[in-house]
Amino acid sequence: MEARITELEIRLVLQDELLDDLNQIIARQQQQIDHLQQQMRYLQERSVGPEQSGRSLLDEIPPHY
Image (cartoon, rainbow, N blue to C red):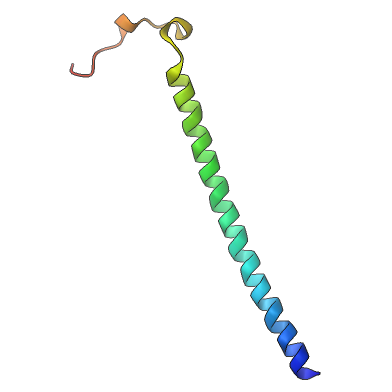
């Protein structure tokens, strides 16, 4: 009976460690998703045409200046 309890305790500890690892992975993935969403918003704002943003292409300075 003692061996069985010990085995169950070991399994519980391993499951707790696995659960912690999975939680860390999910937290990292959520940070990556948030970062990607920010990048998407930025790119969407940049891709708005000059007629929609109120700016003219003449207002933009060419990159070689």
